[in-house]
Image (cartoon, rainbow, N blue to C red; front, side, top):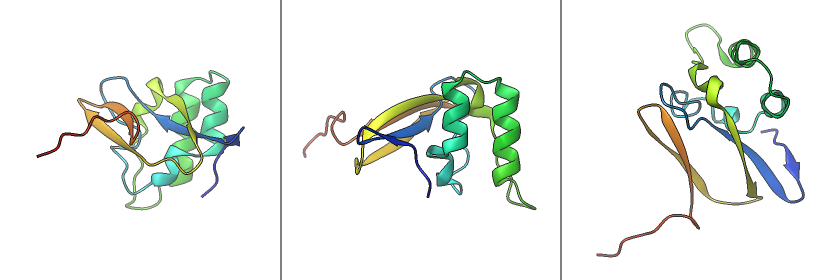
Length: 107
């Protein structure tokens, strides 16, 4: 899987806006978290429609449809290479959680 890595950190895409998740509405496409072309579009403040069109062209094939609704609010989080993380979602708003920023409860 291609990734953008700079200074030992990996660009991870997520969508914190409400409405639709970027990854959480497309679990079958984990590559959408790291795609270098999408990262570049986000970094260059590209138009949402351009991001959506590129995402559909990359990942929608036949019955396998990629829903790019979270493109409007895409953000990049730079994580150290090898970091464990997950993306949580509520109401379409995604939250990036790492093992270091999660408070764990103990029974």
